[in-house]
Length: 318
Ligand code: FAD
Picture (spheres, rainbow, N blue to C red):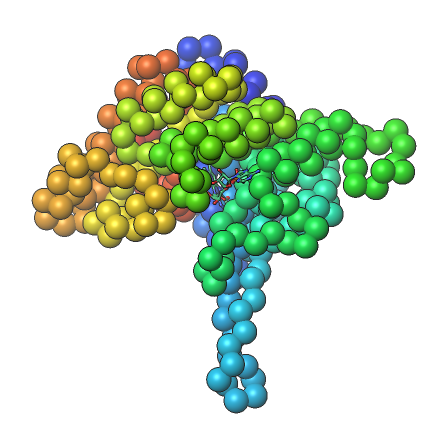
């Protein structure tokens, strides 16, 4: 079932969803089930599975002085999605990237998802890898998520890359896209970012999931601006409970989001990691409750591979 249908059918009860990361190569799928199992009591209608590219550095075999950088796609997203739908009978939502994919890779990926009975995808550009300053698309790949949305929408209309295909099967993917209440880090300003977000919707995206934020006022303001710009699709807020003092620097650096003073002061005062976790959880509970009280029908949580803190939040909210 489509994410948008889950939201329409929610019937006044707020929905809980979350995302998980495929494990590093060499691990067993049990670690995914161990993350998901404790969260199933909150009846997630769908679970997102992220997609990742990683850069590896190899020493040159000859003199060991030259270094080679190779970018690889982390395996697992498609297999985990199939396993989730099979084991838990909930919809799995794979993330799909521009980065590392040619248009043909994208088409093949989508055909596999369709054959597996996966109804939803989140279409993203992906970030630049470590050694790049700016994101670099594959030759014959997509530069922006809006182009990826166009390709998925075309497949939904039976338009494949090989234009000689006749009577081709039409897929029926519900398409999610990412958005940034505090602006995407590369966007020259908020308004231009908003216009490009609108472009993704105009090209066929059905819903939006936001980057994490810690100040609800920024999310409410963002929703307001989207509606004024003519963006009418559901906007799903993304939240993450803070779990360590290190995240006070890591999260603003990596995701370009602000942490409110009140939260930072409390965390700096905390005596140990357990106290930090407790503050992060309480903050996230308050954020979730306020969002739901404002009539937003769903809250999405970034688990980052760990379910214990998300579970402690969900217990108080859902
Ligand atoms: P885009 O929508 O393409 O935008 C990228 C930048 O380009 C923005 O600054 C935008 O304003 C600008 N722009 C857009 N169109 C144009 C245009 N036509 N001309 C000029 N500028 C333009 N990353 C992963 O690697 N794996 C994941 O699984 C993953 N999941 C995510 C889930 C969510 C909900 C979110 C919010 C992000 C996720 N990311 C993930 C991170 C994401 O890939 C990065 O934030 C990336 O830098 C931008 O992706 P995007 O799809 O928002 O890009």
